[in-house]
Image 1 (cartoon, helix red, strand yellow):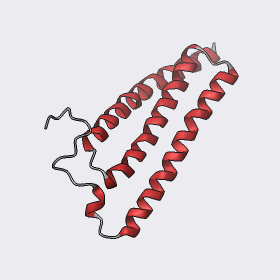
Image 2 (tube, rainbow, N blue to C red):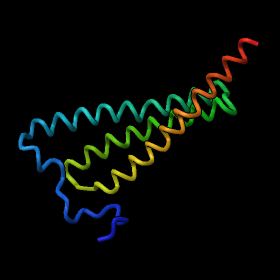
Image 3 (cartoon, one colour):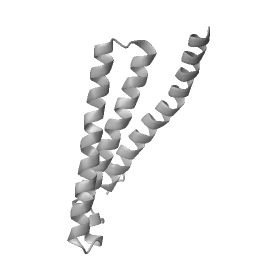
Image 4 (cartoon, rainbow, N blue to C red):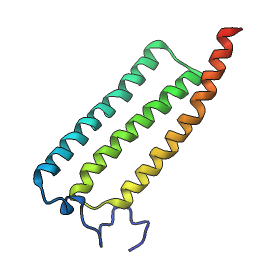
Length: 123
């Protein structure tokens, strides 16, 4: 078994095996599904707004970074549901790394753009 076997489940148990109370599992699934649904709807709205308003350049980049970050958060919650039943933890870690990269990029670029916009409105 290679670490790079992303969907490999050998040697792992799903999270649901640790939760003896099926009510907790149901609540966990419902909460994560609700959060994921919102996270999947928000990026669509950001992209529609960006296209409708004709954002270009840096504004479009920031919008796409936010949309990507939010979408990846939705995928994280979906994988949280999946790992209750299927131990795809390596895949989960890869998705979390992708979320971290996009999150850090967004957190780095946004303040630079805010400062640039603040200077533009002053002068």
